[in-house]
Image (cartoon, rainbow, N blue to C red; front, side, top):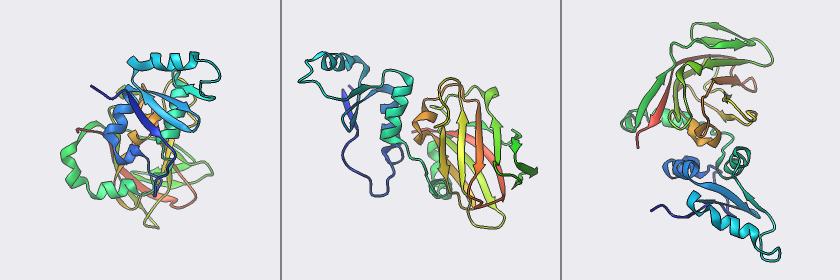
Length: 241
């Protein structure tokens, strides 16, 4: 039987700041999908739903014995806020490139979900020539419409694509997604891909993993690192282990 309580965030730090979402993705996914997060002071735990009454009793104890700052993620906004504090990595840097270089060995443990190669993105402050894109304005964005595919984030946790910067060996992007309901301003993650194959762990973001009916996925070039680049062979994958 699954353990009743999980420690999600304690008083320690990671040397490279990468969270358990990248270190132990299967355990992270299981906890996020099956447990309720709650916070006591600066510590965040996750409890099995069938043990939720323990928190109710804790909330009902006398003021002198109860924690001063018990917050339970029963509502979607609170749940996502606590999960972000525990697991979110704002910038995965060049991890997609490292994983992309290992695609041959990873092919046995990933499976295709949806090919996006035929989806033509809409452009903002950009021009396109086939798979080549050039920034032309101050707020560049290319957006892929995912509505026809009826995707929830728990299944397509990985994004595979090919990236080439025309003038440099790397780029800098924010990936953003839209899904119905709630505040989508935090639905983003940054990456710094180097030229070549990429395998982006979208599911390392709790807000992607728990998203329902994802409507779009956008690339936003950042910081003038690469103003002309090629982006092709996009496809969503899932982990098979």
